[in-house]
Length: 334
Image (cartoon, rainbow, N blue to C red; front, side, top):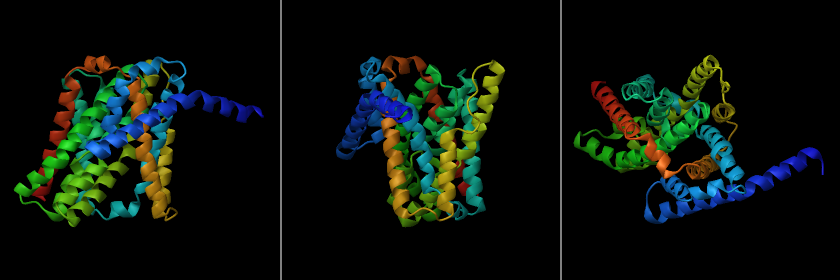
């Protein structure tokens, strides 16, 4: 056997046990979600933390690390398969302006809250972008672009847990509030797509208010997901400069997973992908992110999350309320 294939075979044997364990937890999370309700990502996170003691096993550690890092990046890259330029163009300039302003303002709100609550700037980036763009996926993407520290890993997991719970609450609460305010159809869809964190929950909330609300909510949400690319680039540049000033290793300005994300958006926009490919990539992205969350959770103890304190929870709540009020005010004004 040649040297390169042999090295790959050895690496595969090394990571397989831990990777298989993360896969089993992802399947268990899917079973729990399907039969008992609740977000699959949240179940994967809780199962991972419950089995934290296994992460110290030398035979499992390489695979768990591979799942929490490499598979995470691949899963984020595959998110680009469901976005095209035509979808974004359908929004119109007013809707696009509302969504873009909401994203930028919410990220700024996260940074401001981090400063006011005396938390690291990286935590402001992670929580602000997760609320502003696409919940758990955005938190994972930003965490991958920032310096890989133990503190960032803890805060990312807490953000994933918090933003998933808030998105579930919003899925139920926001349609009721919109009905009370007599906001229906396309405006309701714009609000749902611009404020709820998770794509699946946006679709579910929009379905409660009818086909028009569902379709417009989905398009608006995909526009928010598309904004992940420029936001990650901007934050990577800032993080790279900060690392250079501190004399530490510089993270790449354009992470590899972001190149894949943009490439898939371009391929879909030019018509080089099929609906079957898009669906397969979307399903694979979701599955890989669940496996990655299970792996990352296994590397974190519940006691470590407790060390983060109450301030990150206040940040997530504040950012979520800020975004909802901002978008609602913009819709009522326009």
